[in-house]
Length: 484
Image 1 (cartoon, rainbow, N blue to C red):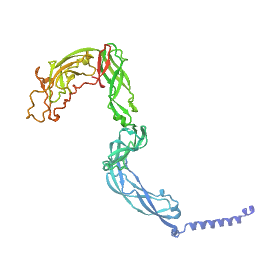
Image 2 (image 1 turned 90 degrees about the vertical axis):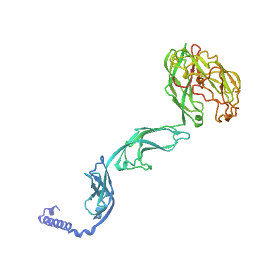
Image 3 (image 1 turned 90 degrees about the horizontal axis):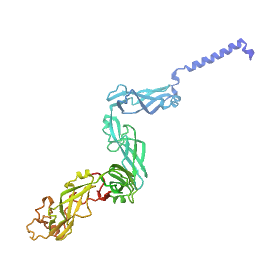
Image 4 (image 1 turned 180 degrees about the vertical axis):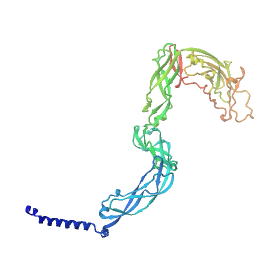
């Protein structure tokens, strides 16, 4: 072989053979194109997405009547079969468009070796509107139910509002921005840091194109046993030192929530707690802790502890002169005459904190002689005295009394008297002169056999009270929560 390669004639023959081969290759590859057209075919590509360029999404909203086209192309089978659909591109240039309607041509881009045949549609209608933003309150709805016997409270949402951005014509459709919580037997408070928000129209249909900012909120949904809000009533225990008396009691809350089943809650109208005053050593204002325990049958009380401000002062006395005595409960068909005291007034010596005594007058004191249920005759009636909170009578162990003479009128009732006339008991301020009788006319509706008791004004009713022991043996009137 080496001998042939060194032979010049052999090398010339070999070169000639290679030249013929190269010439054949070149001339076969450059045959006219029309000889290969039989190997091409067409292909239809559906749903080619229209890409947008040149748009300003921060200022405008663009709406196109179509978002994809049908594209027909031609090429070699190898080119058509091995080109991905993403290689076929259709686009529209939205640069410079202003609000309104515009028709724009579509542009296409094809892979190498593929020829364009047709496109449907060839143009697109574009509607441009200004982008508008409006703030809406965030609401929460629930689906499903909590655990048996539990109830859903008011959700706490952060932030409480969200901004919705839409085309100006579409924004008016937004009725609410809402998040949805799905419940499945929960018995504890639901907490979610990122609850997705949706925009809905008035019919409850979601507006999918709405851009919501923020897209989610943090929410806390209380899930608790049923509860009832009850006014807080405070009574007292313990002994105040020396001659101190309470002048004001102010808890940090006026009401508490009591949790339990509905049957237990239905029987509760207030929450009563007892405050121990034995820790108070001197006059002034102190804050005392008050532990709140669930009533019988209830689960818990919220809050469990409250702070109560208690103000005390040295006891003082004051005499209120000529407090009118009000007659109450005169039966139909009887007249009432107060014979003692003839002035139909009484003087009261009361004790309490000096600041409370300074505010005291006849308008906030009630003295009542209740003769309800008494028959005709002379009766000694124990007077009912109602005083403001933390004010008490001096020597209250000795009851105040009044003598009342109940009589049957000697003059028969005129048959011409109006049928609607009822028994009237005059107030002390309009009492007749001493010795003049007070007549209660019979009421036809009662046939003269039952006693009609006029409803007293708020100052006439005897206030409920509890006794606060003081160092000097006097008692201090204490009622509902709250200071005077």
